[in-house]
Length: 301
Image (cartoon, rainbow, N blue to C red; front, side, top):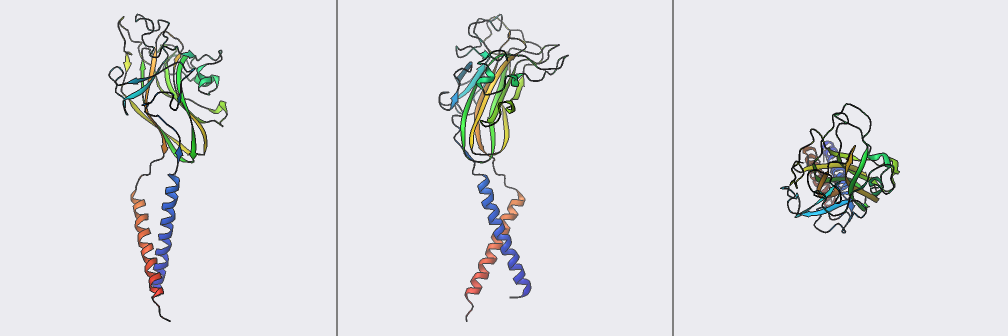
C-alpha cells in the first residue's frame, strides 16, 4: 500500500470513529426523561395536577365557546370569576365561574394567596404596567391556577411545550394600562423562591367590552397559540410547572385561560446537511478501516 493510501486510510478511519462517537453523543443528549403526565387533560386533574386551593379550575370536554381542544377531547380552563359575586355586570352572578370554587387572593397582604399556591414570591405577580399613562407595577387582586410537580429522572436538554388561549371580559385602562393577565411558571424546587419567575402569556388590553345580560361567552377570545420554552439542560430533580390567570388593578371583569397539550420532552433532533456529511464520513471511514483490517489478516507469514 502506498504511503498516500496508508495516510488516507488512517484519516478515514479516524473520521469514522469520530462520527460514531458523535452519534453516541447525540443519542445521549436525547436521553432526557421525566414522569410528567396527563398533559392533554384526558384524565381528571387528580392525575398529575394539583388544583386544591388554587381557585376556579376545571376540565372542559369538547368546545369552549366554539374553541376545540388541540389534543384529545378535553382541555383545562381557569378563571378569576367568582361564583358568589357579580363580576361581569349585567350578566348573572357566577356566570363565568366554571367550577363552583371561588378564585383565591393574589394580594401580597394576604397569606394563602395564588403566589404561595404556585410556590412564587409575593411580588412575582406585580408585573410591569404597559400601554397606560403611568409606569410602575400592577396590583394583583385575585386569581386561579393549577400546577404539576414532577421528577426529571434522566437529565438532558428539554423543552416545555403547550397550547394556550386567553379569554377576557376585561380591557385596558387609559391611565393604568393593561390589567388582567395569564401566565405560566417553571422552576426547580431547589431554586430560591425569590428567583422563581412568571412568564406572561397575554393581557387584557384595549376597550373594555360591553356585555349583554344574557352573555355566557367571554367577549374577547381568540384561537389557540402554541408556546415552546427551551428549558436548557435540566438536571435530575423535582420541578414545578404552573399556570395562572390574575385580576389586576380591579376585579369588576373576569378573564380565563385555556390550556391543552402540555409536554415536557427532550429537545427534538433536527437532521441537517452537515450531520448527513458526518454519517457519510462515518460509513466511509469505517469501511476503510474494515478493509484495512481484512487485508492485514490475509497477509501470509
